Image 1 (spheres, protein in one colour):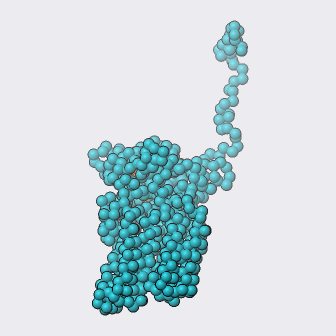
Image 2: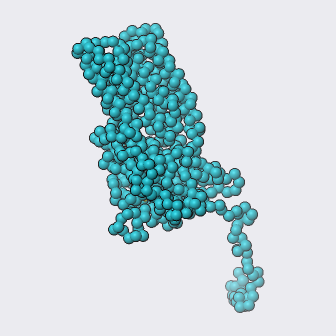
Image 3: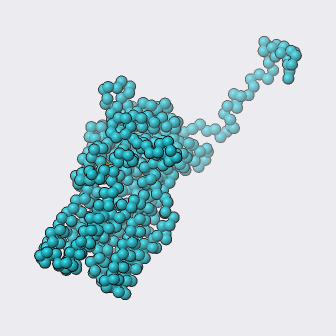
Length: 290
Length: 254
Ligand code: SF4
Ligand code: SF4
Ligand code: SF4
């Protein structure tokens, strides 16, 4: 899949933002006044900034409101609803903390739930696609959720929780890579089933339908950059998990925490780039490519 | 409405004959020609006369080579357009309701004025049957020429999809695959019509007819050889006289 920067920025930032909102909704850290304002400002900037970025790749962003209509069948529509509900519910909750010093616990809990649901629905947009075996796995939502919760804990300054949650997220990441590498082969789809000619012999793409490129090849058959995948995996793993945990162990204070957050963000963005760049769509088979 | 209908009254679709398709791409051109100037946004091209041309097409023809365990490889031309799937994933993923499957005939269409161009439906289609138009920013796909098949302004013979009407080899057939007595259903039955990627669970309506077995030609080097052998070694009768007469002329018997 083509790793579109808008989608990588969106899923990375909003995942982190909604993770932080979830912790704030649950009352960690229990802040009020100006401190609460800063926390909520960061969370909203990440979540809303991410959502805005996601509209950049639309052909008709001005019609984006229509995407709220099909929540009965579409995960993309459900994601829109969850995100809006989470942001709307967290606003009065945050205002209560910032301006009144009041904690509306029920609002916070509902906001936290919908923050989590937003990340889950985002992950289901990818997970539902049988056409991309590397995404069509239970580990995909597990990965999105564990990343978001660990990142949220990190941003919320929950040092002990963050170390444990980062370790869990790291394990999920490893499992995702391992299972993902076998997913295409295990999907049962190959050039034989794609053409229906597999029972007759070995099928080879002889001539493509067009001499130039097209939307399908640009969008789904992204082979450039995959060759560095192994190195990028190491880089992303170290940045996203190893380094932040070490920093938290050694100096869990403001400056250290900031470095840990930035390192985590860079690591998750790299992992997300790989999530797209390494994903192979079955349509590539018609072109004899993956 | 992007929930799929429980069932459709008819299942209109195409039957594509991989045995007779000659790979001429006439259907590709006629499809683009008809659909760029009729229903919906035109099918744009980018850098059409430059060094890196690309464009939107609703129908494309691949060519595959199949090498059996024994014997010669076979070349198979493979036209591919939307298969108007019964369990169309492209419909249910659509957040706006732009993609839908019609109850009356099962045709899968895009309402372009509702499409936000998110591309998710194209991601969900295993067959690459949907292309986001780079100029219009909306999703394009085969409409089964919905603006031809019911079009009373056209001669009856033309009330079939453009690709079907054009194919010089008769490799594309159009009809109701939900009616077991239709010509297309009988053809599928007779020829063992197949689904593409059945494991994807899309239940395509369009069927593909597999290539028929070829004659075995392993025995002889050239099946025309017996026909090429000289019928008479020595000319006789009039031809024999002529042959000799010509030989006697000066410059003859070269
Ligand atoms: S072939 Fe693709 S676009 Fe057509 S109905 Fe099936 S899934 Fe949808
Ligand atoms: S590109 Fe258009 S038709 Fe396809 S899923 Fe998005 S809104 Fe629906
Ligand atoms: S039915 Fe019409 S739109 Fe579909 S491939 Fe044929 S010519 Fe193109």
